[in-house]
Length: 156
Image (tube, rainbow, N blue to C red; front, top):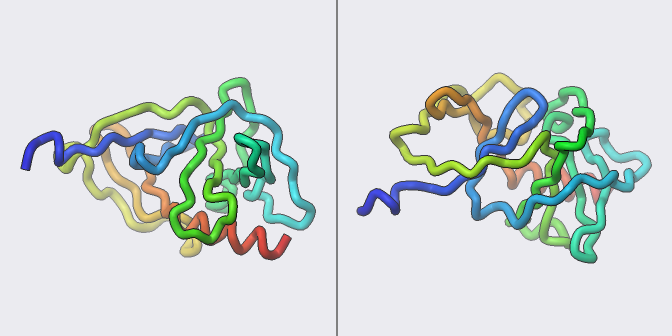
């Protein structure tokens, strides 16, 4: 197998106190932040919907989904638009609030090592934390986050 086949283009997504690392292929677009329309009665991590390409895009705070405080929005705040892979969201996409523009990185088994599988709530949308040279990003469970959003939209 070639070295190129062993590498994966990924994005380091900045959060307020952490970073996520996700495959580039999971991301449809990164867009400027606009204030979402919040649904009454929704969990605080479910920030609401924004208009994205004529669709009502649900936007979440990953920090909020972990039970942490919601981050403040700044001029650097963006929304990373993910493809919804489980089919549970009608719109086919969802957004995650970020604290800056994601950084493109190439990863392989030489630079990415498992660091921890715990340290957050059991129901949190996190698979694990990895060590990547001098970074310690989280690998999100995007399917679980999508399920959380689908349950939230049914309750609203």
